[in-house]
Structure formats: C-alpha cells, structure tokens
Amino acid sequence: MKKRYRWKFIILMFLMGLAGCSREKTQEAEKEEVEKTEKLILWSYYETKVQQDGLDKLIRKFNEFQDEYEISWEYIPMAEFTKSLSFSHVPEELPDLVLVDNPDMESLIKIDLLADITESLNGRISVEEYYPEVWKSVEYQDRYYGVPFSCNNAAIIYNKRMFQEYGVKEPVTWTDFKEAAAAFHGSEDQTCYGFAMSAVGGEQGAFQFMPWILATGADTEDLADKKVKDAFSLIHQLLSENSMPNDCLNWSQNDLTRSFVAGEVAMIENGPWALPEIEKSGIEYGIFKFPVYATQGVVLGGENLAAVNGKNIEGAVAFIDFYNQKEIMEEICQITHNIPPKMELAETFARNNPDYQVFVDQMELGISRSTVNNWKSVCRAISNSLNRMFGSDYKIEEVWRGYVSDVRQ
Image (tube, rainbow, N blue to C red):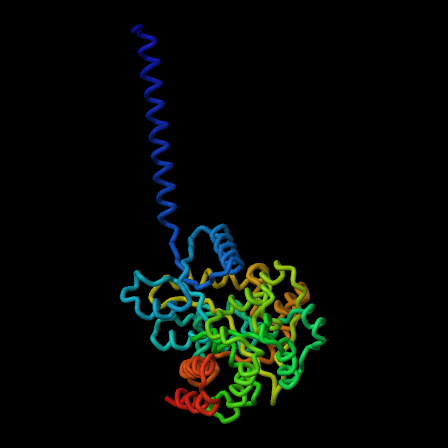
C-alpha cells in the first residue's frame, strides 16, 4: 500500500473511532436520562371505552408535559379493587396512585394505605371550588387524602317514542312513577317493561337503590329507620305488577343500558356514563329527576385520585396537581362523560352538554355514600334484601326484617 493511502486509511479509522465513541456517549447519556425518569403506576377499574380513552389521554398529556416522571396505568376489576390493595403484602406490589370509588376512601385510610397529602395540597387546591359533599369523601379527621377526580349521580332515562305511544308523561311523584311503569304491560306476551334498575349484589345495586331509600326521608345516621320499608314496598309492587323484570337482580348498570337500547325497557335508572351508547343507538331519549316521595333522593358517585402510602408521594402529587388544572379536568371529563367535581366547571359542562343538565342540577341535592353511617353494613344489607326480593316468594315484611337485622349487625 502506498504511503499516502496508508495515512488516509489511518485517519479514516481514527475518525470512525471518534464517531463510535460519540455514539456510545450519546446512548449512555440517553440511558442515564431515562433512568432519571421516575416510573409511576396508577390503578383504576375504568372499563368502558370512553373511560379508558380519557385516562389514556390524561396520562399521555402528563408524560409529555414534564420529564421527571413517567406514569402508566393498570386495569383492576372493580370487584377485586379494594381487595387487591388491602392484601398486597409488599410495597412493590402496590401502585403509586389509585383512582378509587369514593365510598372506599375511608376504609383505605383507616388501614393506613392512603397517604396524608394535606401539606402537599396547600396552595395548590382550593377546596371551595368543589361540591362540598364530593370533597367530604377525600377528607378524614380534617386531613386530606386525595382530590375528587370526577362525580356523577343517577336519574331516570326514558324512551320518548314509547312515552308518546303509550300516552305517558314524565312522572313527578312516586304515584306518577308507578302508573307510568305500569302503562307498558297488559298482556302475557309482554315484550317491554316499564322500568329497570340494577339490583346486582355489591356497590352497584346499593348505589341504585339508595335514592329510593333517601326519598322516604330516612335519616342517614339510622338506615334501619322504619321509613325505609316504603322503598322496599315500592320495588316489591313494581315486581309483583310485572312493571319491572326479575332479571334486574343480575343486571349491571351497563346491562341496563343494553336492555334500554334493545327496546326491552321504557325507563332505566342510570348515570351519565350510559349516554354515549344510547346516543350511538339513535334512540330519542329524555332524562328526568328522581320522583319525589317524602323528599327527593339523590346519591353522588364518582372517583377520587389518591396517593398510596410509602410509594412515590411527590410524583403522585405532581400528577394530582396536573389534573387539577381547569383545562385538563374539563377535557378529561368531557371525554369520559363524567361531571367535573368543581362547581363552576360542572355548570360549564352542562351548558356545553344540555343532556347532562339534570345530572348537574342533582349534584346540589345529593349525598355521598361516604357520609352514610356504617355504609359497608348498609350496602351488604341492601344487597341481601334485593336478593331475597327478586324472583322469590318472600313477603315484604320478611324482606324488611332481614334488612334491619343486617344493618344492625
């Protein structure tokens, strides 16, 4: 090889070596930067497409907004959610944040699973912006353990065409309601029921039955009050008159929506989460508030965003703080079809989505399940009693006595 070519070859190899070193350093720097990013995990039981789309959007926005944390979320079925949290034996099995059903907050706080983030929220959160009853669910003994993520309640959704066909008007009282529900049957080959609610065991069935209990004027401090018997009598009458299907015992709130879309039921008790599927079906529907008995009963549902004790509290608070921004909360609630927990944002949401106005109006009237004395016992008692009542020969007096016994256990 001639001398000058040898030198060119040596110089070329030297430059290639420099480039290789540079690439290695860049890769090492990138790896170091990735390692600096702290990983966060969020658990949620969100299962519908709109719920999951909203959560995906929130997480993507947070990850793009900053580079200190990278969050992802995992689906845990609602029936297993609190059990999975309560029985995780090592911190590594736990997430950093949870999106938890609001009545479960207190029990998780009492077992020291949720972190007290009162000081971290000072200066970041204005409690006055939230619905007072909704905020109560994140507060325990004057300390804060999270922030409300979204809220909702149930109302009565009805098929306008069926109401017109049968000459039925929107009921205002329980008497009106029973008459409306009875208008849709009358023959042995009945294909449409007047009304359906979820009576499935656990939180869903209890959430759906509680508005009828509250409408009796019963005191939430003592839900063994004899007034509650009138709520059981109402459901018993609807079942005995064939105005309501016994299948409700096995129907979830999503099953209610499917039954309504299929034209099997003229009225269902359900929340704003049902509207996307109903709108997609093309059914002309209306929504009215719960009929009045002694009063009007409304129960507030929704989720809270909370940090898990012993995990990355700073990262969890950073995510909570990000969601607390007006534009972010508004956008995510719009996607998930949930009502924002902040009063002003909820009113804006209703103006932009008129079909949700009834749900927003009821927010001021409702109570949170977390304010019900001994809610877990009440929930269990409701589930047991509905199970006795649907598809059985139990007398209403037997159902009532069983309920009282369960509540007082």
